[in-house]
View 1 (cartoon, rainbow over the protein chains, first blue to last red):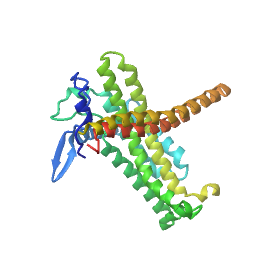
View 2: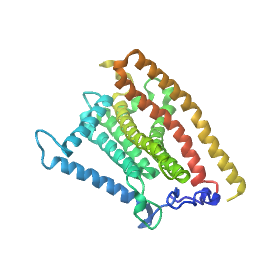
View 3: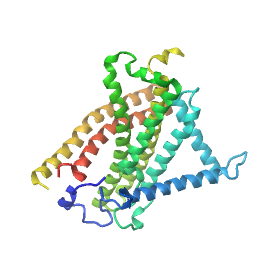
View 4: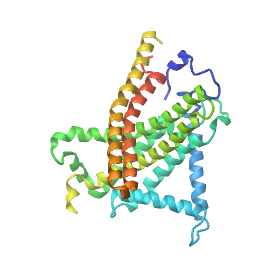
Length: 255
Length: 81
């Protein structure tokens, strides 16, 4: 995605402090074949994946009957995502979806917090700056499309082509709305995550620009809180969509 | 960039975020008020109410965020420039 000329550059307000410079739309471009990708997003995504891998391997390498340290933490994380999935999808069918929902939750959570907790400004890259991978719309759209694929897959595996019955289930009049829903789901999922994370970083950046010390701290805390909540919301909604695809419309009363 | 487009974009960005804040503001106020009422009536259910409240607040928040996304697009990635 290439951004056009930047309106705020021409206003010239945000260039006064180099440390708090706002950079939206500046990217560290990598050219792979004839595609252009945002390099800083890739670097940070790999860092996040690496962190999660190291945590999982460290937790499972030497499993004790009485957990302690990192194993305890990861067991807590597992129980948390398992309960989250169970609450949305239900007792009977939740188990196969725990890895998917759990991965979404952990990845988004660690990605969001990595952007807020690590002082990325200290690492120089040629262009743009390192930040949370989720503040790039491409990452969140990819995650949201994965959720779309997942719930279609869930519906097809359970009901086959009968899955499409849900589009005309109460009445065929609502067919356009039912189809529209499939497009608005990934749209709202991706925009919600992207907007929240970018908004956090922008608010912190603007406050640092105005008052460099101490005043931005409460807002940073709020940012950490919102980031965690957004990870939870994304995972919850993903599980809720999968549940909807598994259930269909008319079956709720059946059990 | 055309100064007219620039001026219109800045005003539109301000309007987008401002108008998008009205509805969720009212909604979040209502939800929080009801949650406080519920906790006052039944203090032992506080944990459950708080969890649900935070989740619903995040949903309402996202409506403002949609306005913010529009504002950011107008400011940083203006399609009409």
